[in-house]
Image (cartoon, rainbow over all chains, first blue to last red; front, side):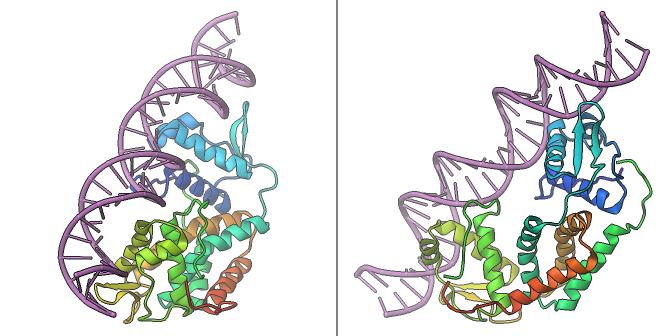
Length: 135
Length: 135
DNA sequence: CTATATGTTATATTCATAGTATAACAGATA
DNA sequence: TATCTGTTATACTATGAATATAACATATAG
């Protein structure tokens, strides 16, 4: 079981799921072309509704992280993944901005913040334990 | 006019406002002890409801960025600001995580990401133009 | 061919939150 | 005595999240 949901979080469930699938792709835990569980199966495993899973899948399909075939079901993007184009970077800056501002106002210096980001990046790229391949 | 709201954004108005006030404190545009407009005045200026402004003020008061006196009205925290304690850092990591993961999966390397963060940090600390003191 | 599993679509309902609209209150100020 | 302050209360609308069923078309397995 790789996906962990916090039902009490203010972050929507479908968003948590989508985020963790992206992280799975980023870490290599989910390989290109790999099949994902059907919406019904994953929904049952996670104890949530079919439509909530579908919403996450659809969003990731829309962004190009997943492909959905009538035949193969849902698979991780086997071709080229989306790039860090200007549109993404603009969104990234927009989302990072308030976080950087609060870190600054709380007294974190530039190095502390960038090092925290570095550590985070590396921990995703090379996760502590790639134990189970299952979700 | 320093605060700019996007009424079409998925980010709540009161959150946009709170974020920009924090950024104002971070940049020094809002000095410690400085008086902020009353909830009614700012609401009228921004064309939003009094309660929406109040919600932002209350949140920032709760976190320790503002003080609210019956007498002086609303002022920027004149004493020591909140620190980057473990609680904040945990929240920071939690919020940064999905952003770092998507940046990684889109092919940004560690340096690109940290440099983007650096640039952002510096642009907040030393904003392009501190023209108007007004909100 | 038949049964099953797939994604997909359509409704409907419940619930929480955001935002607005008014109104009123208590305390401080001019 | 007015006026401005934050504060509280109530009500309403709109939106989105999440769930619950149901049904459909297609592809696969037996």
